[in-house]
Structure formats: C-alpha cells, structure tokens
Image (cartoon, rainbow, N blue to C red; front, side):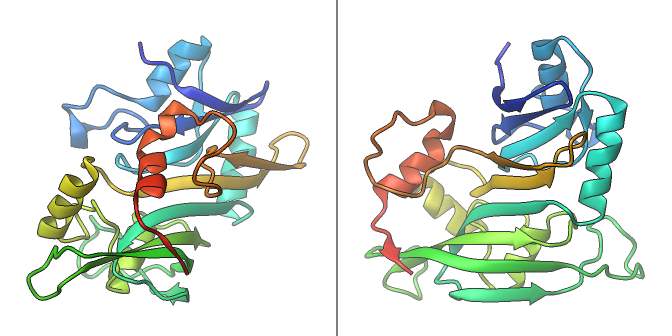
Amino acid sequence: MTALHLLWHDAHLVAVYKPPGWLVHRTGLDAGETRFVVQTLRDQLGQHVYPVHRLDKGTCGVLVMALHPQAAHALAQAFEHHKVRKRYLALVRGWAPALAEVDHALRPDDAPPDTAAQPAHTRLQRLARLELPMASDARFASTRASLVLAEPTTGRRHQIRRHLKHLAHPILGDATHGKGPLNRWWAAHLGRQRLWLHAWSLELPHPVSGEPLQLHSGLDLGAAAPAMPEPDWLDDWHMLLRSQPWMPT
C-alpha cells in the first residue's frame, strides 16, 4: 500500500499531501479508479477519518481530514462560514494579469440549464512568467505561460479552473476547461501529463482549541538550489519551477 505523506497529525485532525490522480473517496463517476485518500488514510492510521473538503482528482496538495465527529463538525463550519484561507498555485496559458479579482457567478457543472448561478469570487496574482522560443500554436512564434497564486473566497466546484478559463488563461493540463492541443504540447515539453493545479496552503482555526493553524504542502518557491533536501512527492512541481526560464513578474 502506498503511504500518504502526513503534513500534520494530532488527536483531532490530519492533513495529508494528496497526490495528483487520486480521488478523495470512492465515486460511481470514476468506477475504474483504485486510489482513494479516505480508504488509504483510514488503513494507514488504523482509524476512521472524516473528509471535510475536497480536491479534484487532478489537483495535488494539502487536504484535511477530521478524526472524530466533533472535529468534523467544527471544520465543516469553518469552511462553510469562510474562516479558511485557501491558496493555490496554477500554471496557466499566456501572461495572466499581474493582479485580478474575478467576481463571476457559477452554475454547478451538472445542474439543469435553468439553475441559478451561485456567487463565486477568486483573487489572482501572477508570481512569475515565461516565454519559450517555440510555437505551441501556429498563430504565434513563441509560447507564454504564467505561474499564478489563486485565493478562492468561495468554494464552488472547479471554481479556480473555471475562473481562469473565464479570463482566457486556462490551467495547463485542464482537459475540461482548457485546450487539448495546447495541453498535449505542454505535456510533451514537460514530460508530465497532468493538471497543473496545486493546493499550496490552508489556514484555518483548530477544531478544538480555535487557535490559527497553518498547513503547507512544503513546496518552496525560493532559491533554485535549496540547501535542504526537497520532498520527493513534490517532484513534478520542483521540475516545473527549476527547469523553466522564469522571469519575475
């Protein structure tokens, strides 16, 4: 059994690094999948775990589970009442705006067409950009991309992915909201076929003490050659950050 990397563990909650390609729990919508965080973590810890939020299958990064019903209720309340600060990193097409506030209502993907859209808000900041002297599209002589910090203040399904598409800067590797030819070009260039969305950090009140708790994936955006060994579960993102000719924003 593949063990999940624990980022935080006490008597009330556990935070793990969710690998890309894993589902949080079993679902009939993806019957062929065999990797599930809930079941793996339950077997790894030898106790029941309670999911309180979710990450898409393709998204990697910080995922929190409660370890008893009271903690699950408190954490669910924190998410529901917007007491959780979520920060994501995304690799997107083109040069995204230096700063942007996206206030664009979203209708659930699987809802009937007449369903009312729900308010959705995301803050975006471009952290770095790059330009490669190779054409991924015959209309342009070069290929551009940006590293973006996304902070959703609401929790709609696929919110970050849909808001970046709304800005015409879809996340690379997004098969649903991006462009297939561009995704395939980047997969060949980077040697990775995946969604480039990373749940970087969560800040939330501890479910028992109420004290602020900061949970981080361990991904360092700093020096090109860190002094400390880097966690191997971050290999994809280390490769992306170290191998490309990034320019300051």
